[in-house]
Length: 121
Image (cartoon, rainbow, N blue to C red; front, side):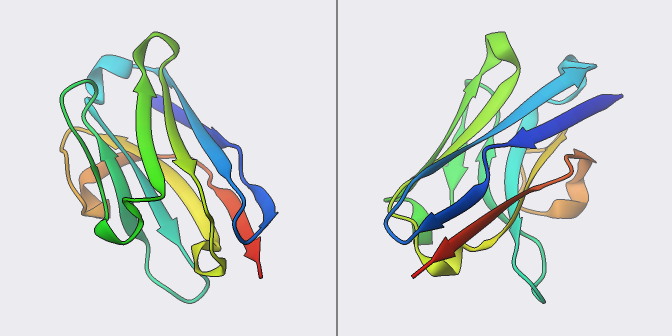
């Protein structure tokens, strides 16, 4: 079993920054891949950033110039730095973990409870 706990969300004005964190605990070795997904009200959950430990990362093109993903393996923590936030970034952000490096939410076994990000204009 793996537990994921997100933090770092909040309310900011457009142009501001937030850093989301996801701390993983439990059977860490069983989850080589981690990801950030977002779900806006009334919308489906979509992947926004992937991490395969030290081997690979991927970020959706629409935010690649403003957002980054990184992982501190010593702390079992996945980060998402979000800069120059826009109102359309408002969503619940979820951390996910699983075996595959994938944009598909169904491939992830473990999920955190989510952290809300609200960006006002």
